[in-house]
Image 1: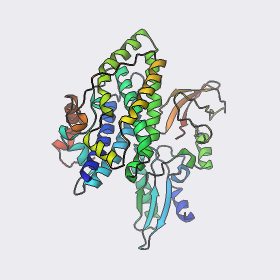
Image 2 (image 1 turned 180 degrees about the vertical axis):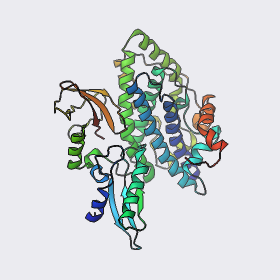
Image 3 (image 1 turned 90 degrees about the vertical axis):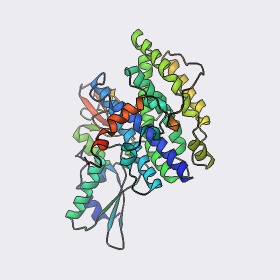
Image 4 (image 1 turned 135 degrees about the horizontal axis):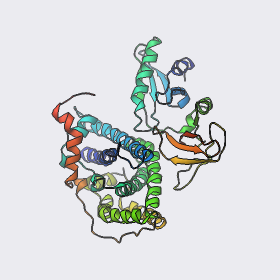
Length: 250
Length: 160
């Protein structure tokens, strides 16, 4: 029970941390100043959420585990984030679409988890729900702006869909610790979120004049620790300092 | 809550919006005097990732120490989640005078749905003829607007 709860909380933390880190790569490179600020603000929210989950995971694990040791000293196979969040930023269209897919998912998940009998998960999600709802609004508007924008932006959105759609199925295929958490009454059954998620994609895509791809093959493995090659590069950059100068402080 | 302590805490400013105190912001959830003499202040973050929270906790500790409280304890609580409705009316007035449009009351107009727009009043000329430039401003808690009458760009303290 404790081990699967730890893994479940780590999974929530890693999703938020890796997406937050990816978005932070835009810092100073956003297409316009306002959007540079927007995407990095979203990073802050996500990394803040990750910290809360890591603190809780460290409490469950006990010993000398801390939020920092969990973020900086685990290796790639120990990360439990989904494959979607570690995908490369690509252009603005791809970053926007990844955010929209993920915010859509987090909004549905957190709105259920805020009622979880695990009071710590419930409190973190109650707080984070307001933030991811705002991210969802922002990213939905951008999907529409780009999808129903110029020929160029429309083409790029279509390309982003082609690249990312195959990673969305994993969100709703439960890993062992998610099934356990559901059996223990802590979380919703993931498959029940899928229809709501797809409905929202359909509404936004229709407005954006973008096609909803048919169900197809889903890339999976991230939630079990089998990642695409990109995660290793993210960790190399993110963990470099703590690995090179152990226990150094800001 | 102990009025004396709240008076002391009203001297601790929000580092990012210094016109507001932590009391105005509504992030002081409780003050508890323990039997062993420690004073515990419970605070709640505005936004999960707000980088000012650590500084706010430190400043509260310093202010209490300066006022003779020996071992103040600052505890962060997440639930119930902070809402802009907890901001004092005085705080909202101060924000407006500072040039930041105060948050709208949540029950009336704050919309969580997609595509809903809020009518935000320009803090300079009071016109409602304003447009949103960006959902995100200089800090997590603000959005960027521009007044179409006086043309002034301004921050809006987002309803949350």
